[in-house]
Image 1 (cartoon, protein in one colour):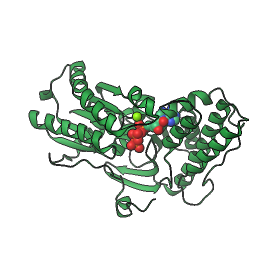
Image 2 (cartoon, rainbow, N blue to C red; image 1 turned 180 degrees about the vertical axis):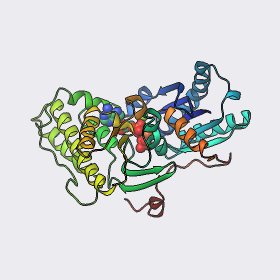
Image 3 (cartoon, protein in one colour; image 1 turned 45 degrees about the vertical axis):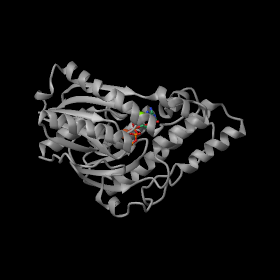
Length: 341
Ligand code: ATP
Ligand code: MG
Ligand code: FE
């Protein structure tokens, strides 16, 4: 089977063709960094307009590179949420139009499921159930991935997401946008022990996360004016690593059935985080799996792959399915929606 995937939930417009046996026939991506940089963050209205302009040529380019036409594909998969609603609607409406025109089924993909299943695209040996640390711009969760569409959440952040913490720290240090890669670059030449920073929630019984206090501590360290920004960046990154490792260790103890420790989402592109989790997995006798860096940050190959996994199970969606700005992966979170945690 061949699936066309479309992603447009934040500031990456992307289209990809992926097969059910894990071949990535083509993947095209247009970032919008330049458009958002003057504002120091993603501006929803600018993002939605940019998706409108970029998407159709990207789909054409993806088909062209694979040497295929719409008639050759088996289904159209698109992110249907969660994310910036304008952008999600652009991608979903485009997918619906393509599906209707070519008489192909539509698969509405949860963007988080795209991240959650992306390790299986890269790693054919990765079996369910696995313990997933999902760390991205909007999320920081520990989940047991029991199967396609089957997620059990152990923990989430009580304030900021991990990627958000990187982005805010980059902004505070004047390192630019997007923040994660900029902080990682600056940290490479800094001393991770130079600045004493808190490790919020480390040692607490529930494996939840908190990053807001860390960000405030970075602000105080900056204003104190006694530290080089590389040292603040390195110390911040080390604090995040320590929090993620401690919380994940806690979750491993709760997931005796997990066959592997897995990390996914944009923050999983951070090398220090990958190395620390690899070490944690090894210490616990678990295989470790992380997608290649380009598959961690938003892309359409992971949406096409999640679409392929759903399509293989007969999970297609009606053409009137709605875009969802919020869409938690686990059913429990639906019940407590708006309750914070
Ligand atoms: P979500 O997936 O939760 O809806 P999103 O799609 O905006 O949010 P992703 O594209 O998955 O987020 O990830 C982007 C985030 O990853 C940003 O916060 C970015 O700073 C962070 N990030 C990217 N590369 C790195 C890196 N090398 N180190 C740390 N953080 C990184
Ligand atoms: Mg982005
Ligand atoms: Fe994402």
